[in-house]
Length: 393
Image (cartoon, rainbow, N blue to C red):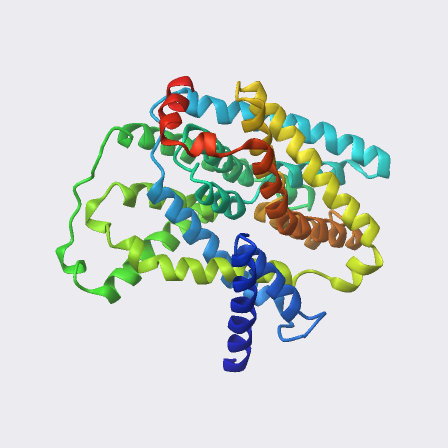
């Protein structure tokens, strides 16, 4: 175990130094490290599922930190626009998946699954670039974050559909409960959005680092467990915990205490994606995988750019937003895995979908970098323009 972890750290560190010189995000290093150390290259890790389970904690911590940082929108336009955008994207995804399915002679279930892959994006990738480009707190960044949160909400009905197709007994209560909880969350956020600070103090935590760490992990992961038990995504539960904690001055130490955990577990999640890449299959079917990846990146970019332009964003902003939402995300991988395990899709389609999804995550970082060249993102980063964006939207 010590040797394995040491080699993982050494490989990742070397790749990070290289990517730092190329000005690329470190998550590429994590994916490439997973590919190199996986069961098809150096064979250091032969059980990708074990790291995948641990890595999912990183997604919960990531959503928790996003919740702590984000401000709840006060304007209806910042809520309505993401709803319209995601609705347009779902319709376009279904239409595009239908044409792909008819061209490849796929059944209806496979067509719907392809539409799900187009619907979900990677929160980790998008947030990484929003922070890097300084757009996460602008009106544009808030709209994109709200779109990603809506996708988290859509995970529950998507999984319900997959369970129904797999032959599991349909429970109407399991569909109504998440909907009721979502409405309750909406009213809670509406209540606290004008509150600058929630008075909640536990003085015995302030000078005890060990208590701080485990209290923070319990809050983050506990809300995730609760949300998953209700039928929602665990990531959404952690985000809600982050929003509430962000309003409490008594927990100002949480970010400092949990940041190392977030970095480590998020890296493991992306390492697990690299580990799941079936290199022999990718080589033998490289034309299909590469073509599929290109189609995903371009089609997702076009669909996303269309709905951003529909929401009155400028074309250069719309193209940048399209590049940000070009990849398929973590929840797409989850839906694909469930569909394969429940015999909804065949092994070949599962392998192809997994390969395309992993490569779209890997190459979307390059695609986004190209998008920033056409966009000229400094127009949004400029502080003088931030107020103008909020005033307009």
